Image (tube, rainbow over all chains, first blue to last red; front, side, top):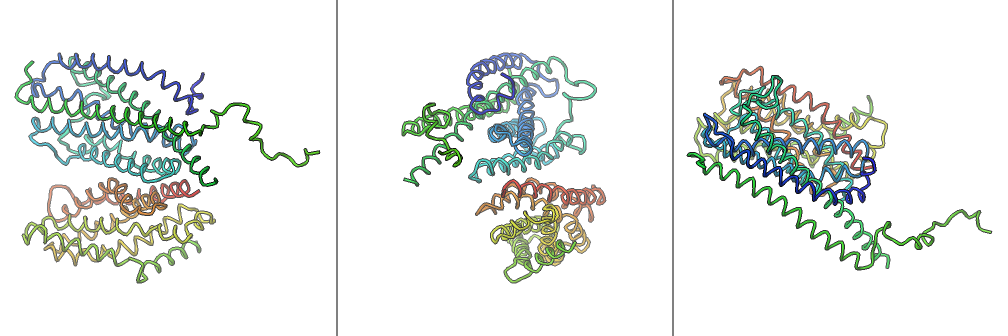
Length: 244
Length: 71
Length: 222
């Protein structure tokens, strides 16, 4: 069975049902490993134990941004290829991405209070991530306001692609402006600037969170396929009742 | 393990993350439960999807066809 | 060119008609600006410091309010379908509509800004800067708003959703507009830098707005 067979929603649901238990186990294991790694990670000489917040804050930020990337790819699938699963993937990803962006903002704020002395500052990085959160809320509102799922998918797709301009702004905000938020230290051209004793747990937690996103996204997609089927059948029922 | 003077921030951050993840998981599970039950209700009322119908029903669904074929 | 200029003239005429709503934007601008001193109190130095920001905020909200009119009335009476099926490229048609909207809704705001600045004790130099930045920035507000209008055109109560969608995209315009206004009178950021970015945002929106709006309209109304 090739990848193209997965495009059929029924087959996708079936495959997902088989894969999901394994993904759940993998996620739990990854978090167990990551949790142990973060517990034994050394304290930062400047920040002390609060550096441990980073092990949640950075994965949450990564996922919040990656989810919008997934939605953008799905948006192309909807607009260009009218792929049936693209709509489902986009709608399922939105609340999950919003949740992780919120997690990023909250953990960042709680990290900022002891480190910078303030819960919030309007610098470029924080502002653009807040804008991302607002964009998530907007696209979710769009999904829930337009009745027809196909029309909603197309409107959401256009909005997602327009909002995607924010992603490079977030990424480069710390370079283009003087920000309180620190600059890039993990994914840099010269190699990471972080010591392995901190980098390894960070990678561990990144992996765990990514598996978590995959699991949640597939489960949500399965629900969405079911929701559409239910809607079709209820419409058929209403139609039959109207004819009778 | 000593979390230092800012322990409350660290704990709150981890707790907030846990709450958000738990909320996502619970929402997806409850949503699925509701959908499966609604689906079962609708199917119990006799409706089924096209692909769920038995094969012998298909001839009845044949379209009008070409008038020239009729004798 | 004839169809496009006809469309422009038609839209401008409709907007300045009594029920057209062109001056309602200015009225709303006035209301917002008068409410702020009531809320903050008659602290004149404070008002003059935040004056440019309040003027920008009022202009943004007034523009948002008027965006509902941009496409919805044409959708309701069927002219939007004519535009969709006509021979003029849809991108140009919606761009012309947005231009007409900007001329009738946003330009009055630019003209009114210095007068309303008097209410906020904004000094003359700052007033000119605010007007100039509004002139450069309101096209961005209108053309980005065009995208929201296109996405929500078929909804009955699309106005609030439109605002929710467009507001995050307008935030950079607001930030640079106010930064440029403040920079003109005082401040560490040079006026030229912020102003040029504001112009860049407007120029970008002149392209992205109509293209995205046309895609949204075609997808939503086919």
